[in-house]
Image (cartoon, protein in one colour):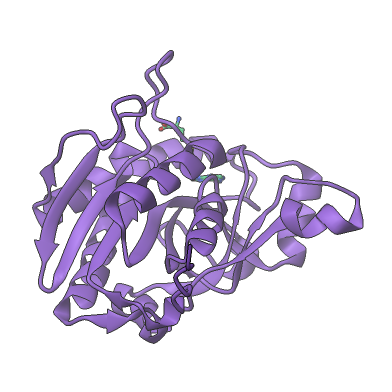
Length: 256
Ligand code: SAH
């Protein structure tokens, strides 16, 4: 059977965007701002929340990762993110996938609560260690995001390195890795989603808003819980600007 030539992701014209959030509290303010309507679950088992609407020339789908069936808490972390991203790509065929959400920031990189980052360069995993040379790249991720300096400007975000792992706190070795790599945003989903997008040929950008500071004496969970609502509202305001910029006229993924 003849295989279709893979399309160059930079040449994709963005007419459909999927925005993937982990937490409903992060997503709800953008659903309200864009007037998106809830859709039937795209998957009856995982039951992510799915909202959709139109913004200018753009069809917008917004997905969350659903809830843990035992505890009822929202799904977070890289396994849920991988499943959610693959499902979103297969069912919704986006021309661009955005992962929006909160993150830990770094005072050493000039961040404060409320600073917003758009992913720059490769996305990393800071908590995967396989000390065998051939497996190192797989462990550390290093999945390229789509460069998006103009989108960052439309959002009012800085560009910075994003790294994902499966813990809210962090071990000394992980902190050392993130310092070395000049990581600006530490989250639990973005790199897993980047990995799916690269392999499926879908342009990918992460947009992360700082709720807590990793290199600060206050435990991150305290700052995270205190700031989640306020920072999610701020992120939604900036995400609305970004989505409206994307919907002003069709843009190539290479022109983000
Ligand atoms: N109990 C919380 C659990 C959220 S886990 C709740 O449900 O309200 C933290 C989430 O915020 C993850 O989705 C992660 O991507 C993001 N996040 C915010 N600050 C983070 C940090 N310092 N490290 C890792 N992830 C962080």
